[in-house]
Image (cartoon, rainbow, N blue to C red; front, side, top):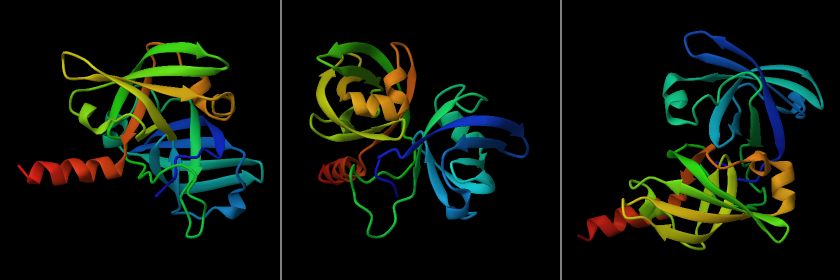
Amino acid sequence: MFTGIVTAIGKIEKVEKRQDTRVTVACPFDPGAIDIGASIACSGVCLTVVGLAGEAGAARIGFDVSDETIRRTVPAMWQEGRILNLEPALRLGDELGGHLVTGHVDTVGQVVAVKDAGGSTMLAIRISREFAPFVAEKGSITVDGVSLTVNDVRDREDGACDFALNIIPHTGEVTTLGALRQGDSVNLEIDVLARYLMRMQSLKG
């Protein structure tokens, strides 16, 4: 489990096609403090550490990315040079600063608007009809691994919806969200509580 609070930015340094796709991510973590088999969320995708190299502040971490993961995440995400939001798995006793995040991407959304909002940035993201019912005003959603609060929801005639998020300057600086532009795709994970509520409601008939 994760909290959606990004602790570092990494960059895909190497991509190798094996049985799965092996990616090596350069980041400022300490490899001595990470175990093989540990989980790290990479822009919202929970991946298992399979390789470690480098030194404190200049780690190189290897992950195997399955074809299924590649299919479900942002197109062209797993390429050399891609910048990723990184978060180690939540440990017992850690502060829950965001919301409970599983690291399993539900769908890919599209940025439909980027506007200045008095120093902050307003992002509007479109989510498909299948997942629109899980998005609610003042609810939580994870965008490229970042826990955010939904400010506004606008339903569309086709069943999809556009939801608005406020990105404060700090979040824009320490994550990849500050670089998003209209037309970009993002990994989305809906709130697990919303998923359970929808399931219970459906069983009531």
